[in-house]
Image (cartoon, rainbow, N blue to C red):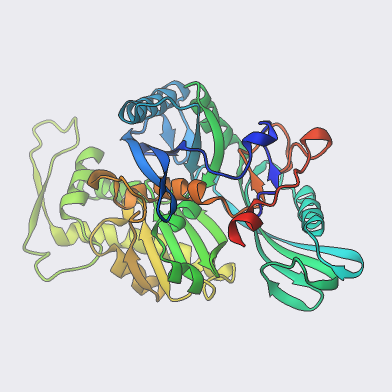
Length: 439
């Protein structure tokens, strides 16, 4: 909400709060790397982003959000960026990284900032409160990705969205901070920098996905976003037009594929194909009659194609998906976020597209579930407008609309606290972008 602290070293003139005319988002996952390049165009209703370049290709050298082969990962990243640049006919200097690397997680910071006397709250008081809270926040081995003011308090008046102009003796703030493990992010950033591209910022996947797939009513009344990737499933809780909680699980669609490969004794590639063509999260009356052929594992001399009823395939898929949803549900309840997330949930990500997944999630969570796609971004073709590309589209929307956060720029890995440049000429800049954009 507040473009208060800028973590880069660009001159102030380059940080006016306006989105650049051309910018890009890069989503690095375990199975695919996607790059969107966008140009901001002026329309009769104001500036709107339009996609002018897209690319996606298989990921290499990355597993479960961690770099396992730096050279292979760098080549895959470079290939995706270059394909998008050729389509957009422009060269990039920096990208916004979208990822679940480092297991993004939420923390709440309660800030109390007594005023010197009973008087009107000013912008300076807000900056002082945010500065105090962010400077004191520190988690060893983790970096701050997002700092989102949830609500303010002036004396006994709670739930205040804009405290400026109110009179009181004490100012309070409820701040939502999202952090991630530093080392996995550092390695991903190195892969990008090897392509001679800078990292303009890092966005947690569930945050970006929620911005792309939620309707205004869902974001206001409360909704749960579940982004299902290959090796990780991340969740985001939105309420009162903002993100209030994120979490992630080290389980995803690749684990379903591995279960199928083991259960049917077939290669992983064949298991992925069988899952996509025949898999379902729910039972159907003819499952016992429909037979599926599975090729043998390499090395089985004289082995032929084996046949299995579709009921067997679905009996492998369903328990793993139930496990993922039950773990996510239990962690939401442990964080007291189940009620806050309301009665709606939206599934997105590449692994949610299996038939019956939304219905199964609805049963486990006890919420109304639907599949979410990035439908509010102009210029997306059919091949890149599915749930697998929601996070990349959401990062574009976040950048074009202005990030509703207290810090800007990419996280620094050189200093442990979330504000590495807190002091001297690189200290907090008196820029409250959120106020200018929202009021």
